[in-house]
Length: 307
Image (cartoon, rainbow, N blue to C red; front, side, top):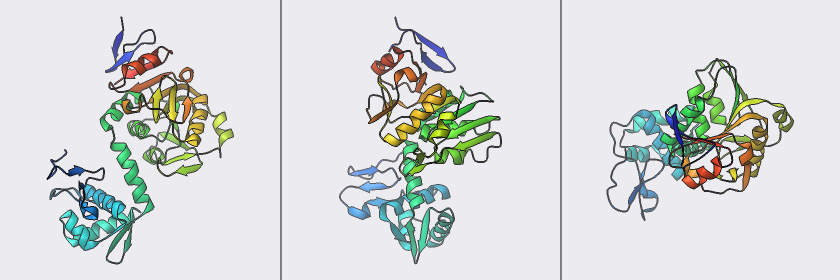
């Protein structure tokens, strides 16, 4: 019989045995895009329009401006005023604020998208995917960390959630290749953050490469936390070979290797395995993980926590 143990608020599969505010669109052709606009199929560039929300916060309104510019490259003040249902004075103030943050470039009569704005929008979109599951996974991961330890957090959006839970801790050393993770910990007085240098992968906002291969091999990390593009009974995988190689190095120097992966990645396959089953100590995921894969992992002496 399968055994399930309840501990720390989540279900734990033992090594011995395993059991396994959106609005209604105005018509049937409408759908909500990742940037928060309603898209009317078959209407071209005019398909994008903001929600009619007079109570929208300034932060949300500016997110919509960045999203609109990412889709259209540039827009005039009058155009944005109509799309957002706010005054041109408000739009100009928002554009000034966003330009000061490097998220767009002001041009005569309006603004155009910047590289940073597109990058942050892409990362924010990834971050919102399965967000509640990622937060629960992060809580379970953060509970494993104690003061005095050194840990690795990769560039995954789940690792960023872990960083947010750890940033008020004391006496921690965090090694990361994630730009957003490093920025999240930037003002944490009790945490020493070491950023692994290399070449930036724009789509994942990670630093990869072999510029510090010798340094990586000499590190000793108490716990390594790793996201993954895919998880099967064969291990944890990445689509990018260079990112996979960097993670392989960190797996080798981690005393405890912990996967932090939501269930949507289970059953997928990717190009390169960065952690084989015998190199993984634990995987924290959500309750949607397929039972067959959970069983296969447990059968190979991996602890799987379902949160």
